[in-house]
Length: 257
Image 1 (cartoon, one colour):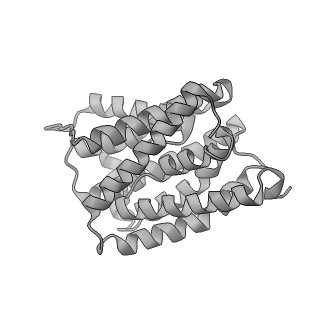
Image 2 (cartoon, one colour):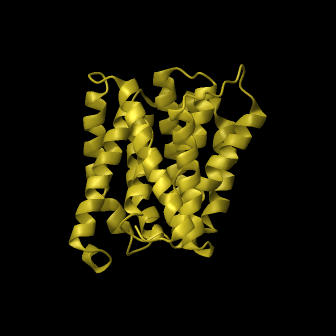
Image 3 (tube, helix red, strand yellow):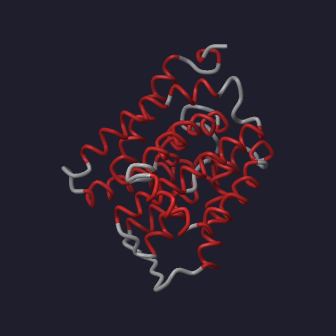
């Protein structure tokens, strides 16, 4: 079984390029890889193959991000956000089992809606603020993140919104995102080995996207201190908004790119 038996050389080249861009943006702002990967890959590949492709690069890059400041800091983040992780895991596993039962148009809408909503409210400058951590709000945010993540591999928007609402310091927020997304990626691997999305045909494709994603992430991290991150983040959000709107268009009026 070769990669070219499930996608053309052109599609593979485009997929590798998308993985590099996704890694680059993740290296700059700490999030966005699953959204960019699934949005970009879904423009050239079937939704289930796009989902399979993002799983292993997401797992590896988030592991690097989570452990960048050491194991002790990562463990402390797990302890602090244990409610988010536990509830999110439960809903992620539940959502993953529904992937093969959901029509492609619904699948695209479920990806596009959170991507568009998150990007739009951030571009417009809206901010959600919590004076103190709330177990109830944390559980609600993680339930949404987990369920959508299980369906689409995208659980960033609710997570980032919650961390931003807590005014989490930048470095801690990046580390916490790595921990949450990393553990979620482990669960996603297990869940989609069970759902059949990740199989003997799709694992090689997902593995091929790891190197370009890691190279892109390395470049992004090197540029993080040299480029105005606020401006770059706004540009990233605009790209995500366009990608999300395109997914909504495809979900509402057809699945062709």
